[in-house]
Amino acid sequence: MNEALQTYIHHFVPAQEEGRPVLLLLHGTGGDENDLLSLGRMLSPGSALLSPRGNVLENGMPRFFRRFAEGILDVDDLKQRTYELASFIQAASEHYAFGAGNVIAVGFSNGANIAASMLLLRPQVLAGAYLSHPMVPFQPESTQDLQQKPVLVASGRADVIIPTGQSEQLIELLRSNGADVQEYWNNVGHTITHEEVREARAWMEKHFQ
Image (cartoon, rainbow, N blue to C red; front, side, top):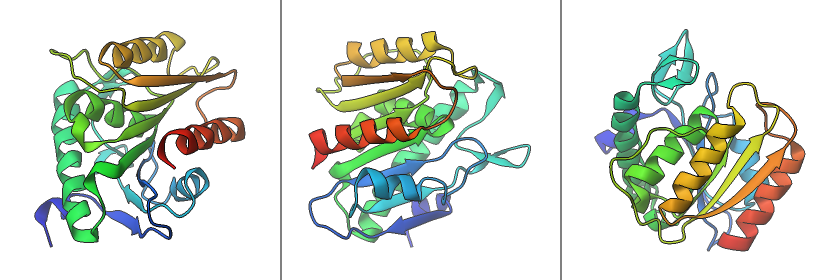
C-alpha cells in the first residue's frame, strides 16, 4: 500500500453511480472519519466518499492542522498538512481507482479551512469545494488561477467562532483568484442546518451532475 495512503485513518465508500464526483469529506475539530458520511450521501447520492480523520490532536480532539488559539492558525503546519493531504488524495485515487480530477471537497470548520488552503496551494487537486463555516487560512504570497472553479461558501451571521468578516474576506480572496464563488448566509451559529444542506445539494447538482 502506498505510504501516503497510510497518512490518514479513513473510510472509502465506492461509487454507486458512474459519472458522479468523488466527495472528500473533511470534518471539524473533534470529529472523525464517520462524521460527514451521511452529509456526503445527502449531497450527492451515489458518489464515492473519501473521508479521512485529521491526524493532529488538540486536547484529544482530531484536527487537520495545529492552531495556537481559537482563530489563530499555525500557518506553517497548515501548509505542510495541506501538501500531505494532497498526496493522500492522489494515493487514494490510485489505490481505489477513481478519477483524481473529479474530487470535490466538503469541509466543515477546521475541514473547510484546510480545503480552502488546498484551493490556494494545490488547486489542481480539487474540481470544486463546499466550505461550511470557513475562515481565511492565510494570505497567499502569490495568486492562483482557479479557472472559475465552483466554490460554495456557507456561513452563519450568528457564528461566534467565525466572524462574518472572515467569511467575507475568504469569498473575496477566492474570487480574486478566479474562483466561481456562490455565497450562502443564514442567521444561525457554527453549525450545518437543513437549509444549508439543501442549498449545498442544489449547488452540487448545478455544477457536478
